[in-house]
Amino acid sequence: MTAVTTSHIVIDDQGRPLIEGTRTKVIMVVMDQMNGMSPEQIHDAYPYLSMAQIHAALAYYYDHKAELDAEIARSAKDFEELRDEAVRTGQQPTREMLERRLRERRQTG
Image (cartoon, rainbow, N blue to C red; front, side):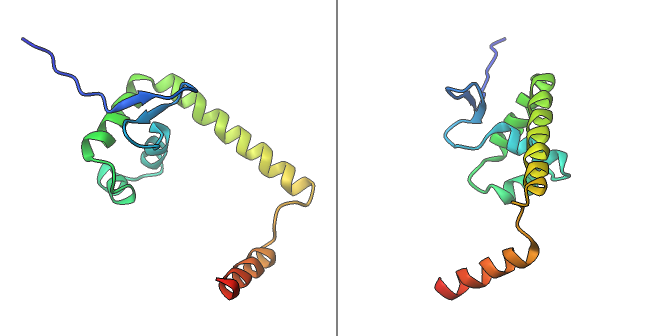
């Protein structure tokens, strides 16, 4: 019997798994699945990815679950720290500020 493998996954210079031929990180597809999206919904969100690429990303995740789960946890912690710092220092924009920026963009765009 001859084994045939098609990975669709490459590792970049920083050690992050990407879907081959794209800039899409495996972790992005995994996070979408964790947020309740099916592979078909992920394909709708990333129409340039084939279903084979999406399933390869998910298979890569399950083969490297502990490592990628740790990366997801680190990213979430970093986000929370940055958000908390922005709130503490008053640098987090208010809804009014965001709405004003949107109006200004619409006027100049």
